[in-house]
Amino acid sequence: MKIKFHGHAFVEVNTGKHIILIDPFITGNPDCDVKLEDVKCDFIIPTHGHGDNFGDTIELAKRNNATVIGMFEVANYCGAQGVTAHPMNTGGGYNFPFGRVKLTTAHHSSSFPDGTYAGDAHGVLITVGDKTFYQAGDTGLFYDMKLLGEMYKIDAAFLPIGDDFTMGVDDAVKAVEFIQPRIVVPVHYNTFDIIKSDANDFKRKVESIGKKCVIMKAGDVLEI
Ligand code: NI
Image (cartoon, rainbow, N blue to C red):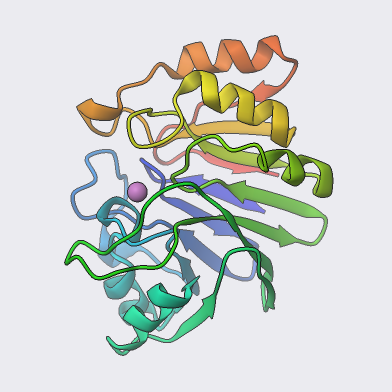
């Protein structure tokens, strides 16, 4: 599985057969390295309704005839705009053509930019073959992350460190202790002034507990 980072919390998972986008925030994302018209995808998973996560989901789904996988309310919202959508809810998993998706708990609010209720925010676990990728979504630290570490062998975990809206550095280091991923990547920081955070400080602290941290720039690819 190849995971390409596109800035903020936007990642592109390429299984070799399918492309899955998570939180495709292109329009208004100062760190994004791709143009909307150049992006190809088969599935899109917005972790919640906020503009910097749901982003360009509708436009990308229409252009690529892609299926949106999301919270029940998010799927309904997409369906009402003529987009194919697969509804899920927190704690549920489903086997898609590319692999298994499970929606995990996230402590965060969720509504669309127009104010429409978007259900609960969530994280995403994607398992393809023997590899598992965890994108925590926007979330504060919560103790049940320990369950993820106990129940799954997580190869890569993308965790927010920007503080203010999500975990900051120290809470994200505690999350690493709970999740025990093979590799951790910090996301959702420095895109805007309000979420300025020190990724090098995070990396040092993660390494001090014996874990590997990779700081990715937009356009970088992590293979797991
Ligand atoms: Ni958010």
